[in-house]
Amino acid sequence: MWIKKDVLPQTLASLEKAIAAQWEHEPQVWTARVDQGLSALEQAIWRHNAALESSDGNVTEVDSAQSPSPGMDRQIGHLHDGLTDLGQEVGVLRHSVREVLNAGGERGLSEELRDRIISLINALRHYNQEETRLILETTTTDIGAGD
Image 1 (cartoon, rainbow, N blue to C red):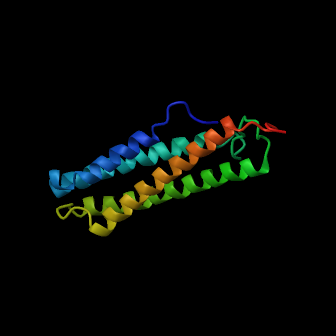
Image 2: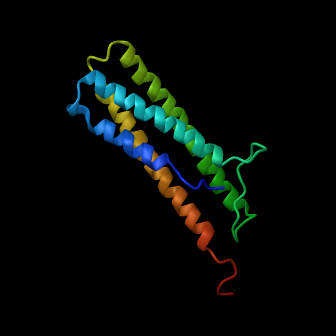
Image 3: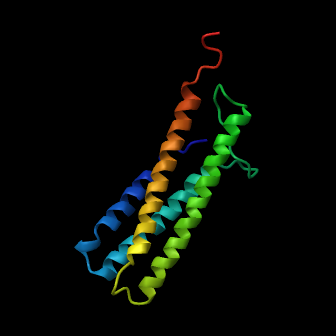
């Protein structure tokens, strides 16, 4: 179920670095770098999210001592839905950044748009923590231990 090399954290760090470089570049260059970071992140999210889906469109089954488990299925489904929502937000933000670039980009990103991107980064970091917690839970829980 889980992809072997997850590029999501790397692309997230790259976007974070691009956002932080606001004062190091001309506004148009900075905006273009943020756009590139959002584009890479969007692709990484959709690849990662596809790894959560099975060939029949349902959420992939987890191979663990807890499977099959309705609770585990709900948790995985919740992660999948959350990542879908975050991927859609990346698309909305990227569209907004593109509008700034198409207008010339001389002013760069507004503080509001920058804050929305930072909020997205924080939400994706939270998602990664939840996914890691779930992976650890599925691999370390010993059903029946202590009975």
